[in-house]
Image (tube, rainbow, N blue to C red; front, side):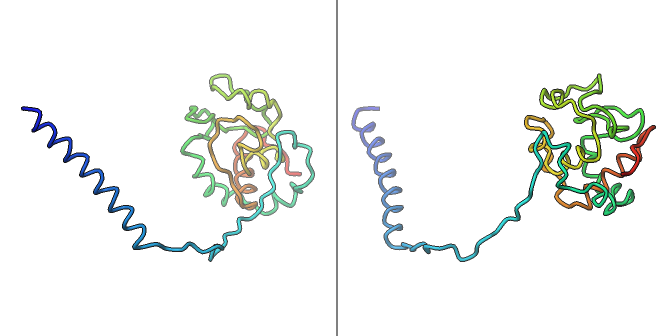
Length: 177
């Protein structure tokens, strides 16, 4: 291949690039669309109050009223979301998440054969109704640094039902407040 052939190839590549970019610029001028200054439809997201990691004593949620909203039967349905990562049966094996049998009333991060995040081990609180409610609302906000990637249960009835359902799977279930 001589120098003339190489020059033709390079010229063809440069010409193609110029044509592609030129067509883009020309089409921008021909089909200019003025964007509106204000959005036609505004989406307002609901404001959800989350509890912080030190809020087990927070009285913003009346746990008695919350638990009255839920049922164990409804909790069984909602808990199906959790079964992808957790087992609740006695003697079950850890999956992506730890076994949740007897979780209420137990210290966080206390199953010896499960590798918890450092944040959950440092949390070190007992899983009470109030703690579990805050955690299930939004785990990442309740215990910053937890590896649980679940978005949370926004509906109070769903959280109450799951808490009641998990409490029913225990040798020593917590008494209802």
